[in-house]
Image 1 (tube, rainbow, N blue to C red):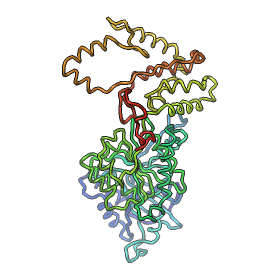
Image 2 (image 1 turned 180 degrees about the vertical axis):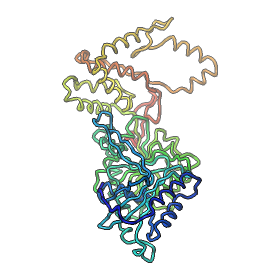
Image 3 (image 1 turned 60 degrees about the vertical axis):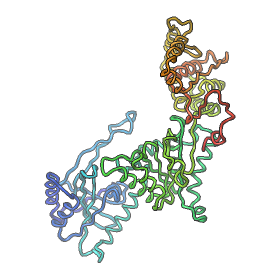
Image 4 (image 1 turned 90 degrees about the horizontal axis):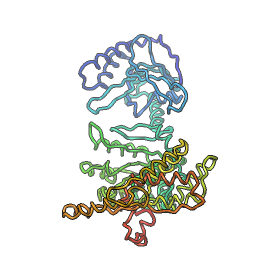
Length: 534
């Protein structure tokens, strides 16, 4: 932040009395804090004109930190209100003690901008009606400089420059949560590690999705030529852990690298204590219209748009307002839970991409991705043939489960726990069900006693109906490990960890996952399913 020594001897007067008024006001019932502060300033500075602006619209102190404005907080005496703040290192792995800062609740500043010296107040309070904090700046300027419209030319030039800077993103992503927008640096940093090269999915689906998004922002003139509104909506749907979230982060990263960058706005929730979800929806779309062209992301769309706000949401999506330049991206694990007015109505969400349980080819690519990551590790013998075995072994695994498979495998090897894992599996497979000649747990084993009991229980109509409603389940694939890999430590642990993870999975048939009962032939897939989108 540019530091300004200021002229503390200038006879401005009154700011100590303004502080006392503010302190008195905040200690009693109040109706309109902004009005109370403005009246106090006008009374104590009768020769000054007061220009008020909201800090979220015009972040003067943030503008100063960027080096474009010089400021100094008056700290002589006790006529200011500030809290010391602490910012720890970004992660505990980083060295250092962190840093101290200041959160000013009420302050009087000297400032200088473009050679012009001035003073301004900063006041922060909690608005009980809206249930959130409010922060305003009150800029003083000589009344002699005020034009017929009641404005100061140099103050307006400062506000325009600071407001434009405030409206832009500086290595940040807009996140909407609890009724407010926040510029989030942590999400931006996380997104920088999400590249399309690291996203394993059907190549045709990936290419189509990337082209769909990039072409939208390249095609403004084409939309205008054909008098078509320049807006679009897409939905990413499918089983959890199959790549929707990482694809959204990769889209954000790719759009941030464009020239000029395309802003990303991420919506966590519509929920707010007051004034309500309709207010949140309005705030979201108003900000998106200001920042357009931009990508507006609604993750878990089915959870966001509830019945009571559905109509209001749809009105913002394609009502009378101009949404030019806005690409909406919604994601959901349950497409069937989305209202048809959202998922099946043209001009709202026009295209849907299905993220299914990865097929054999995608599992091969994922294994090769890990092989490349570990190729410089001399302690890991990652034989190329392992990829084929693991790809066959993990049929039905989502990418999230495949990631867990490799992470747990590497942790087992690093921690020297392979023998412990062997002992646990041996003990598990040695369990014998009373009255049964078949071992219980383990690949390919069947619990005949449990099957007999289930058959007996199903003899009643109630039990039979309950059994009928159950989804058919998939058995873990039986894969013969080649002789040359049986002594490979990595292969051995991968095999054991895959068996352990299988027990925790939901292995039922799930249309949204792209799984089908064994009786259905793969050739019966629709063309859209084969392409990964619908």
